[in-house]
Image (cartoon, rainbow, N blue to C red; front, side, top):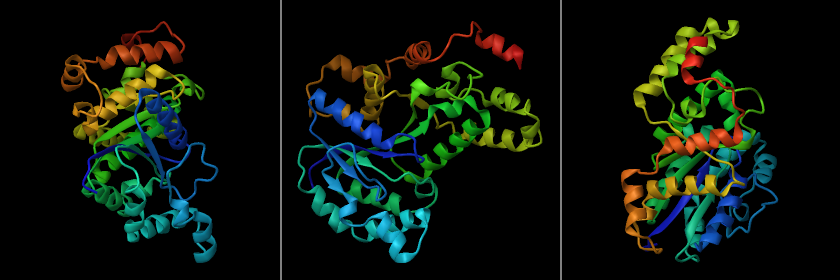
Length: 306
């Protein structure tokens, strides 16, 4: 495959909204005039809500693997990805039928596949050799921000995934309309999207008697995350056009699509992407005003509370 192809590999934990994102992004891109192809690489996906051009279930399904090899769902997914890796000629033959398209790869929802197992990483590497310019879009539920322990966990997972997958990477806080469903956020939204000084979050976590005895461990985890200084998030509500636009601009910047000649682009838009002139703070502030209840407190007030 010599022609240059752009696309996204959509990854993340189970239930984070990957399939919903693929359906929403496919409709969004179609309205923008892009010719979109969705590739389902999740053998556990049944009843797909979007038109699927390439479906791994034609090669292998999770139910068949679990029944035939007496494996559980996790072992079945790992075997399925290893089977796909061994049959990449099948995937190549399917992708060859689609020319001048933008690709969305809907991937399985098992964290181990992206943190330390090599099959998915090798599949992505082979796609790159086939001239695919891909961005990994890593979705995590936004309501984890309401629980400091869970937020530190998703930071560790996101960092590990970024280092293992080895693709341009965009971390996304999905389901922003449900962000305060399980409790209020301790800080403003930009604290979480930009992953600001985690010392405040660790101190906030220590106020819980259960986590107080793990204070030293939490401090070290926070130091690892901040030493790499790689993780940040883009907030997303699939039903919000402005939110989808922000995610798409970030993805297009990551894989280089916005610098190509596949669409009409003016110099101003290109320069904006090149120098990052779309100020993230104002975007995050508008999202916070839309989806979070006002507390009347400033960041300084939050710090004083701690």
